[in-house]
Image 1 (cartoon, rainbow, N blue to C red):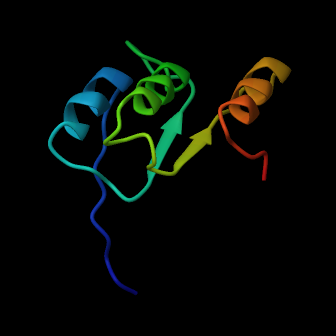
Image 2: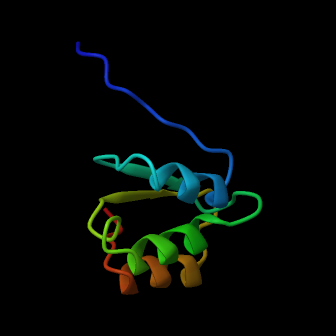
Length: 79
């Protein structure tokens, strides 16, 4: 199949810096990252008109009701 370019970041702060140069078609975010967690990163993405419409897949090993509720309230889906 076709090879797609993939950018990586070690934490939310680094991801925000990379997004100032490049706008991806899709973002995968882990809730547990150092410096700025995934929830904080998504909140920052939603504030920026350049990044607010990028689809985000939230990946988490934490299955707590508060994380699920936050994701749904932020426009996400549990599918």
